[in-house]
Length: 173
Image (cartoon, rainbow, N blue to C red):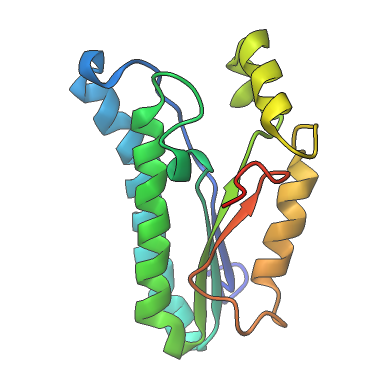
């Protein structure tokens, strides 16, 4: 605000994964994942929305994951999936509460995208993930960026509260 005098767009893109079956997951691990994946976007939205209200305009995109819709992409990913499911609900609530004030909030759910986060996956997990994608390729950061540009555009005045899967057709229902 001090530098530009306004905030028109907020992209909440931080995220960490946790692995391990739910029954052996430490409570501290669960709390850390929710603190970063859910509390972080909540705090940023809480602080930025009043500015957007004054402007009568704002675009918020919260990055979740298709794991939120499937319960996880691979064994022991329930914690991550649950946290990203909370992000979807947070976005829908914000869209409902602030849509009349010119603020849109949408969720973007990437599928398998080659990033440092997915670099920790095993070769078998990567092969399995790509085989399940009808596009038969992993997504790229550019694929995600193009979808974000659509959602934050000033011309986008009617998309609000949606969950947009950018996943090469992985989620087909």
